[in-house]
Each structure stands twice: as C-alpha cells, then as structure tokens.
Length: 187
Image (cartoon, rainbow, N blue to C red):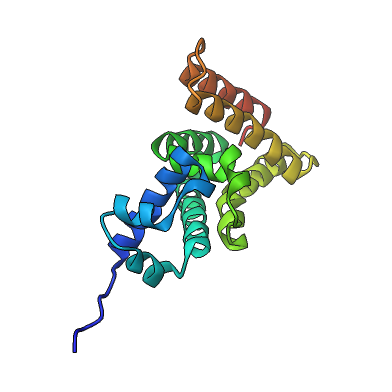
C-alpha cells in the first residue's frame, strides 16, 4: 500500500504567497485552486490537504498577511511611533500583494475575513505607542481616535506610493509626515 503524501510548511507558505500574488493580480473572485496549485508547482490535492478548500486558503492568506505585518510592528514598537511608521512603510513595500489584500480595494472582494486575533494583534503595537505618547503628554485624547488618525496618514501615503502616483517623492513625504507625528505626539 502506498504511503499518503505529506505536505510540509514550506509548501503551505508557498501556496499562501502564490495565492496572495494571484489575488493581487487578478482579484480574489478570479483565483481558482488549480491556478494556485499550478503556479506553486503542486497539485490541488495539496491545497485541499493543507487548507480544506478555497475559503480556508483565502482566510489563511489574509491571516498570514496580518501576522507578518503584526510581527514587523511588534519588532519596531520599542522605537515608538516613528519606528512603527517606518516599519509600516517598509513592510508594505516588501509585501505589496499582502498589503493590497489587507487594506486595498481587493480586501472588500475577499469572501472571508481575517481571524479576529490576527487583525487585532497586528494593530496593538500602534495602540500601545499612542497610549504611551498620550500619557507622557498628559493628554486625555482618545487612544483609538489618535491611532486611527495616525494610521490614516501613514496608510494614505503608503497607498499612494504603492499606486505609483507620479509627481511626489513619496519617501520624503513619508518622512515629513513621521516628523509631524513625532512633534505632535513625542514620547
């Protein structure tokens, strides 16, 4: 009797990254499991064995994106708001397909949502840095409101840069925004 094929974590990660790239290129509704398997140089059996089906694969892709982003934010968090901002941009530029799936117009088309832990853990370092900055300033401003304001600013600039909107030095614009955030919320 033949032994069943065992699929490893390397293949699982390759399938997640391949799916993210295909989703960013074609949109989630156009991604078929056979296309994912072919692009990852494996079989659809591997996809079903590792994930169960398309919905579970898409959830794994989105969760992996949020985990990766959250890891980069936690690594940067000792440096405060400016370090978080720099890590945000760096991660987005290194993972444009994931970024688009998490925050772009593609996100609304994905027939799944990230696991609550994956998405909330990703944003937690920003909330903690904002709380620390506000406490140091003796401010009673709302942590969620200030965090959303900062996130909106860095997100907007990164999104414009990734969209390759011409006419602006996006790296310089981003640094200018981070300096303004630091002046407003010094730690």
